[in-house]
Length: 114
Figure 1: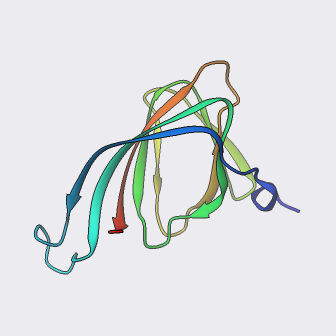
Figure 2: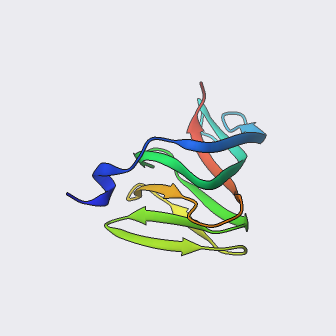
């Protein structure tokens, strides 16, 4: 069984909403969507799971502090400060902090409005 299927549930994660923009008035055809920016903190030993995808929810992540391990396609990749990754319709993954300090990322994505 691949590690994607056995990813632990979320623990040790705090999410702070920084900003949102209603895209309907901004871009034709984007009614019901919003651009959002969040700061996500994953404590040492924390997990941002379970496995999730980004179909219909594209985004990008930038690491401010610590190291985040991104698990996708059976591969674990570590990202440290100043690095990041895209999250497109092909992304199915989960994240964890294997390091000794809190990992902090800025996540920007387009989502359906609640």
